[in-house]
Image (cartoon, rainbow, N blue to C red):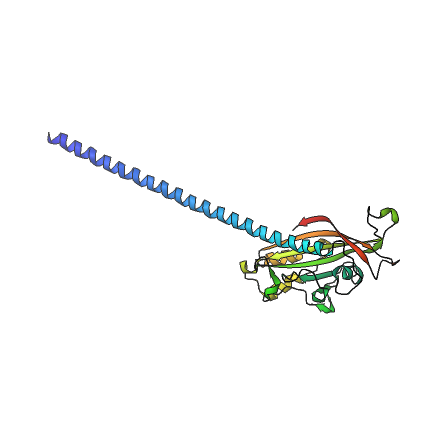
Length: 259
């Protein structure tokens, strides 16, 4: 009888130990599932945040181009030094850049507040105040979070068209090609300072080197997005050399690319 009772106690002890092991295993499994769920949730949040940031930067670049296009489509204007299109057509040499910060308080672009950069990276006297300033509130857009620098490169000077080349229903006599480059970044998401910003923004944006600004900012850890938009400028003028007083400037977007 004593032997049977001892056997029963021993069996109960083993059962209790097995239950404890099972419970511990279940706790380990549940803990692992919880950790995986948290990691998955964090990854999803990061992906969603990255997508939101990309969208904000894309919209900032797109708005900069749209402002340029909407401000100058089918404009009728005599030559004036502060008019952007006139300046691009009459005052720039092949490969030169016109650089300015997209001012959220202005609807048009004033070439009195630009940087006119030569093909070798030098600037013209009196035309070197177009770079964005991290310390200037007016240089921010998209709810005060984003800075956008816009530059235009003259890729083909104004050239007279033959009559059979004129676009339909548009009495255009001349055509020029320009390349627009918009670079947007969120300064608050990086430790970049004004000196570093200028170092990157001063890179020339010419043809195959067009992504140097973006690469420089990315190497500094900035959250940045750069887009390129090519344009044709169709111009009506009575001048035989396509220069001087012009009217009926049509801005025609052509190819587009993201860097």
